[in-house]
Image (cartoon, rainbow, N blue to C red; front, side, top):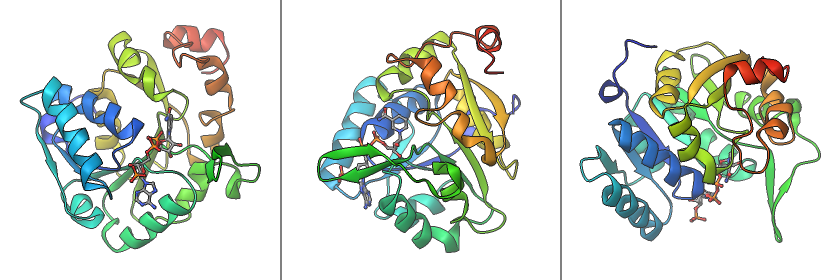
Length: 227
Ligand SMILES: NC(=O)c1ccc[n+]([C@@H]2O[C@H](COP(=O)([O-])OP(=O)(O)OC[C@H]3O[C@@H](n4cnc5c(N)ncnc54)[C@H](OP(=O)(O)O)[C@@H]3O)[C@@H](O)[C@H]2O)c1
């Protein structure tokens, strides 16, 4: 929503991995207040250090639990592996999710002993459809950043690249404003049922290419039949 200022948004970020760190840097740069929780206090500390080193005035604080972080903000970004970790975390948070929006960035990679592996069978046809099953009524669900590599997040933001998202259109204005605050330009490509369009191995992912920046503008996306 164009009228929402970044400082009136609030994002709770779960995790201290690649995506959590890059997203925290983008939102910190935009002046979006952040509350971050991660299960490893040490890695949470590293994320905080990275953010404050680049953005000393960042409005960033840490929480002692996923629930405490979630309660601190209207938008929840669980930057956790899809599958059991994400499902268990969202299930535990169900009592506090109604009225908030989950900004879901998950791709259907399952963790294996050898590392992440693209799931062959995805309940509901997409990572987001499986997440939607876990959310209580009245919870917003916006799904984005799945077609781009973490290493390309900052460059895409700087370039004002188009950011396709899908949503259930419940309470999603603030989450879409948070997407736009990063510098990426959000463009709705459908509902949660269309989430596979933007997930790993879908058409946006293929067009984004290895560097994650293969789609340069909305006009370019239209020329590729993505919009
Ligand atoms: N990496 C990408 O380029 C990319 C692009 C688009 C979307 N995504 C999606 O973004 C999400 C995060 O990916 P990532 O690459 O940032 O992963 P990552 O670097 O492996 O970070 C995952 C984070 O989740 C935490 N975690 C793992 N299991 C947990 C559990 N059971 N409970 C609580 N925390 C747990 C990890 O904690 P520890 O450090 O303690 O293990 C870590 O902080 C995934 O859903 C992925 O599909 C990733």
